[in-house]
Length: 182
Image (cartoon, rainbow, N blue to C red; front, side):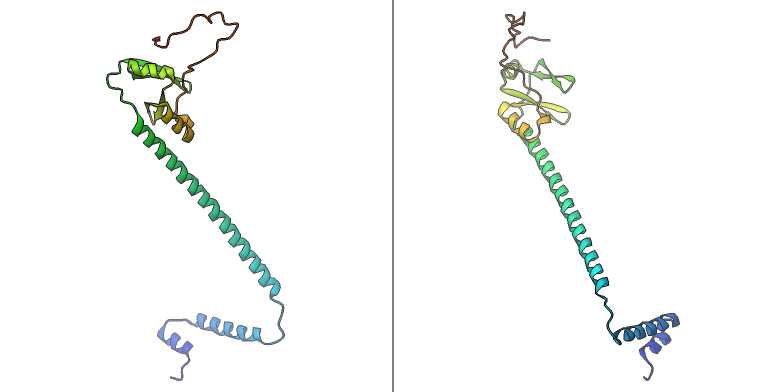
């Protein structure tokens, strides 16, 4: 047992000669650093500490930005789910709808089958048309206002119920009936 640990590792084949020499060199270098007057390693240590602090601050900022993005995405997802739930719970049935109600979605003209009673309510502003994916549904105006608060792009424009005619309009005396089919 007079063999050193290094000799035992070499015999066992766990380490090789090159590793043994490097370990001896590192051991001597470590001893030599402790002897003699202390050199000022403070500038290097300060630079390393500052670099570490800067890296930690940058990582914290990246993490904070990532958390904000995740939170915003979760909020958007919650709003979409709320809108979908409002539409599903409050949509009006259109069984027996035989009239086509025409409206615009952006620059596209669309039509929706409605009953005569629903057409009258749409004309008076008591019902609104909302988009649910590729479908369009009728919902009460109060529900449409809640949906508009969450996502205004889902609610189609309400027809103007009370418009003041221009003084110069030659057709001011001729009102267009609400039930006009076009």
